[in-house]
Length: 60
Image (cartoon, rainbow, N blue to C red; front, top):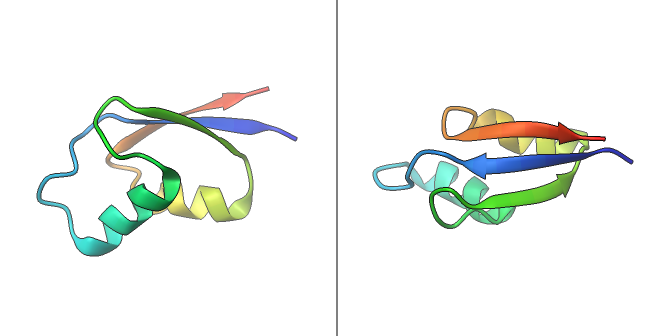
């Protein structure tokens, strides 16, 4: 199964509660942190909600 690397490139300060909860669920607690998650529709939906804060890269 494919995986996706997610990196938080913008800070969490001043974001609304729903965006912070999504970042927490992804495991992104600080700027420049990276996590690797399975590439599935649930993770893609979470990334879509905070797409202005993160950068993604597909891992084969």
